[in-house]
Image (cartoon, rainbow, N blue to C red; front, top):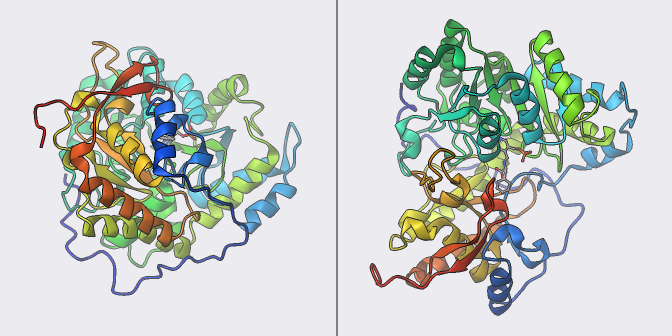
Length: 477
Ligand code: P70
């Protein structure tokens, strides 16, 4: 099984609807800071960008999660939210949208994606279990491990090659999957596929791969779930890149993707275009009933589950808006635009560019910094100091320590993610981002590494504090 044939110049016709398919009705002021101010602010933040105040950030690419701009119709939807404790009209509105867009009859709203993971995994994952995924994202892995189970990443070799020009680098390796299911049998409660594959650079998963994984799972009697935070972006890549799908509508592609799955967990803060919210969607009534027991305990009554009625209303509309092809063309092209600008500037990035973010390759950007000094984190700090741009390290800091050995896990890719909030920044903002990266590249010899000052035991990247370490003499240029 491969991640598809080389893309050549299949991507992108001469002309593309780059311009935003919307106009701006409300604006939020951005504050500019000086370089000296930023150097001091990041020092006080313990060199952790999560500790900065957003008012001290000029262009905030920390995450595309919960940071998108809602549409006028979503804002209007807030006013018609039904805040009933039980049987809320807005719950049924959400349920209908999920059924219409994804084809699942059962929905449990949760306050965000990790809450959906908590409810589903508490229902299905037991100590000693093994959960395969193409690549677990951090909260997903943490929830699997929190249940005393092992998270197994089965993306193919292609996912770890930062420049292999392949269309579906998010694909799970079907041979490895089949082998894992044969080997671990009963210990596998389900298989999960993350679309798009966030930890692997926002890379899409092909329809053929989802179908292939579903066949293997069915043959082995194991359910398949999608971690579907960015399902619509994944569908757009299928339309763009997978033979046979160019003339299929996004709605039909989305329906087909989910038709192979038994259910999904969704962080609504991404493709459902809301600032808070998530859900579990399921095909099986019995599993739904078992999961609602935990949903009531952790989240709330099953017809609101951790959300206000208005949040469910806005999420229902977001699910319908995100499958609009004009929107997706703009979205994917905007991310590609930033990737092109960076490449032109000689900035090493993960290629091809993914759906929601451009990932800088910190190992090629800062080849002289040892891994122990967190080159990804050091680069993210530098981008802030240089241009007030906030990205996030997706590398060693995020990977945490091996629960068995207590040692740092060194992932094969050390990256800084520049995630684009949906419908928020213009291409001029992205020009500033590209310029910022270029300036840091020009003075990369000055960039110093970091070491922990405080290291929390779980999900350490969110709250850790660092200090700068003097640049080692070895490798000094
Ligand atoms: C992100 C955020 C969240 C996420 C995800 C996938 C594929 C589940 C979840 C959990 C997390 C983050 C990372 C760095 C900085 C800020 C935030 N991903 N599955 O940005 O969903 O956040 O709603 O609990 O990507 O990628 P939720």
